[in-house]
Picture (cartoon, rainbow, N blue to C red):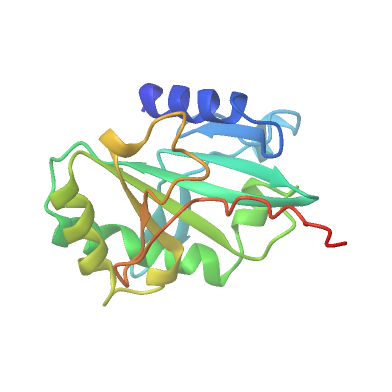
Length: 182
C-alpha cells in the first residue's frame, strides 16, 4: 500500500489543480485531537447482528474547485478471488455510503458520496472484479485500477479506472479551458 500512496502523492505533485487534503491509513486514528475514549479508526463496525463492518486499507480526500471528495482504498494482493472480494467488501461500503458515515471519517468533505478505489495486481483481476461488483450492493461506489496502470502521470487524468459497467474513465476529468471566439 505504501507504493500506491507514493504514486498518488507523486501524481498530485505533477499538477496544481487537485490537492491531496488528507490521508488516513487503516489503523491510524481519525480524530487525533479528540479525547482518547472518543477516538476511532477507519474500520467501522456497522451492525452487531448480523455482523457487518467496513475496513478500508486507507482513505483520503482530494479537493478541486472547492469540492472535497472522499476516496477509500482497497489494495488487492491477489489472495482472494474477485467473487470473494465482491461478496465480502461491498455490503460494508454500501452501508457506510447509505449512512453517509464517510462524513464522520472526513468531515471536511463537501459531497454526500465517496468512491472506493480497488487497486489490483493485473488486468484480468481488474476486469473480473469490476464484473463481479455489478450484482453487489452499491456497485456505483467502486472503481477498479490495475496496479501497473497506476502511475503518477496517469493517476488523475488518464482513463485508468474501470467501473462495473465496463467503462473506463479518469479519476478526475481534465478542466475544460474556455476558448474565446472573435
